Image (cartoon, rainbow, N blue to C red):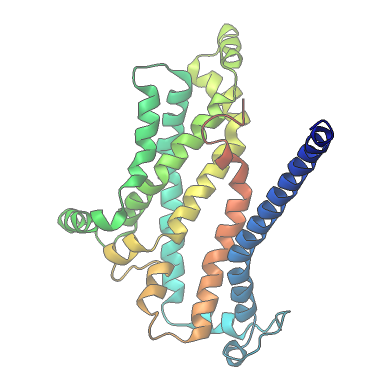
Length: 285
């Protein structure tokens, strides 16, 4: 009995080490699979976009793209693409302006004022995304037809703003929460009113974050397809246009269109990534 006790005690640290190694291997494998799940489709999208229309259907694929811009040239010259791109850009810009115009003041009010139900209000803002858009498609279509907002840039931008607004409010709330209120109070003692203190002290500090929030709203509108397909007919965005012609368009047009949609979103999301983690006002404190 006395000889087995040191052996058992010595085996315990080894078991802990083995468990940690196994956990590290599982974590590394999970990260690898997740990266592959995201990056492999993007890689094949890039390879087929930078290939000639004839090479898109060829197999096997080359690891390095041949950098032939035939597919992109065909996409740029395809009938209706230019108008769809213009509509997507206009809707996304209007969405960005409205989201920040409403979301930034709401975020500032949440960060600076105390009122009953403040925490519940933050949850309710986020819960607006809990309602699936297809469920609201028919009521929205009927209301927009009656008000004359169907098939218009402003009408679709209003819908996209409702999708982007919760994130705009919560991101700007976290930004304003990271700015000490003492800075504004010091500006008040020096003769500034609340508006002047905000414009001269707070706004320069949070402007990069507000810009990132605006870009995030732009990406949400840029990639949205369901509302654009339901609420537009003549003035379709690029996503709705590609979905409409999905069964009749050639393969290289689909790859080029997906590339045009994905690349701006990837760039913008990379630019705003740190503000998304600070959505609840933790990272900036």
